Image 1 (cartoon, one colour):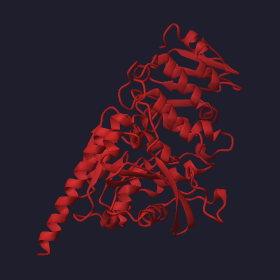
Image 2 (image 1 turned 60 degrees about the vertical axis):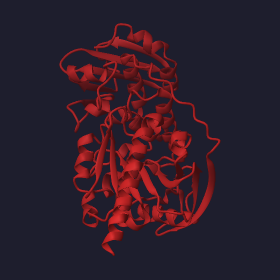
Image 3 (image 1 turned 45 degrees about the vertical axis):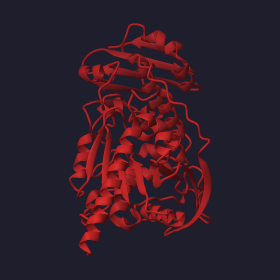
Image 4 (image 1 turned 45 degrees about the horizontal axis):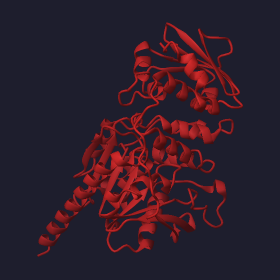
Amino acid sequence: MFPQDLADRLASDEELRELGLNTDVSFALAVRGDETSTVTVHDGEVSLTSGETDDAAFTIVLDAEEWARVLASSPAPRTQHVLAFLAPRGTGEVLGDREVFAQHLQLVRRVIELARGADTPAPSTPVSLEGVVGRYLPVEVRGWGACTIYYETAGQGAPVLLLATAGSDTRQYHGLMSDPQVTAQYQLIAFDLPWHGKSNPPAGKRNTDYVLDSQTYTDCIAAVIRALNLPQAPVIVGASMAGAVVVEMAARHPGLLRGVVSSQAGSRVANRHTPWLRNPKINQTLHVPEWTYGLMSPESPKQDRDRVWWGYSQGGFSVYERDIAYYSICWDIDNIAHLLNEHTPPVVLMNGVYDYSVPPAATRELAARIPGAVVREMPELGHFPHAENAPAFVPHLLWALEHIHTSAHVHSTEASEATK
């Protein structure tokens, strides 16, 4: 199943050694009904043995064909991580202590990367942040009260509001905010929700008071748009949970928007919210970034994917879990479908096809529920298209923005003609 020199690869890899410091664990990787190999990590020292030992805390079992797909040097979309093959998405199993599996997901991921031999992706594009300006904005949000929101701007032109993914902040958009193709045409504005990034919890709120639902999320975005006092209605852009809420904004606050660009949203999203996300026995600074890392395309530059990982390792306690509760529990197109009609601002739905949590079919299903929505697939990208490979995302975004501005002009002209 594994390359013959895998033991040497594991023993000599600095990243695996660093991830395994102060760790003492053994786990097995098994082909269903066939061979098994055991990985042992002891304070950064890693060894590989044939067969399963009594010391293995957990065993990951996949069919031979599934292992072949996940270990391919260039995995096909939605096969790049073992999580993509575990139930309910596949027949894979984790036998033994699943809590220990969650505690050591980072080791499993790195072992498979080394077995794949996939550490030679394209280099990342240098990012210059000289044109990015940060400020604070006071807003009042129903349920949260007085909030001080951190936001960043770059570029000039028609305003585009950028919303970060669950548990994340404005840094996800630094690649876009430093791209002259975008900033020459658009004023980009990204902000941190309260409890996120550089936006502290509101005055009088405890660190653990944070709860996100459709009402507070859309109220906060609407409050920020009003407080910014922009010269024209913005297009709002978001992926993952932010990809869901921009559709909610088009339904609940259509008069505030010129249009929306949504990535990685389906009619609803299941299987992302788990007890592991707020378990005191599981290190959230390791588990949360690993829970999301595999959703990205392995073809995206490793440094950029690692930056996404790093951002997720810095979130406040329980913030990611509360955000995912919105994404997996509150968000459902059935809740707002009655508000969507031919007067809804233009909606572009995009899908990075490597994302196994929201496959292209799920985005097409959502599009069928939104009048006039268009779908664009991004074959080279995954769940974080704006952050994992910003240069690859730029052509898709520019196409979407042009479509929205053209469609909004047509709608405005038709409305004007209808009133004559």
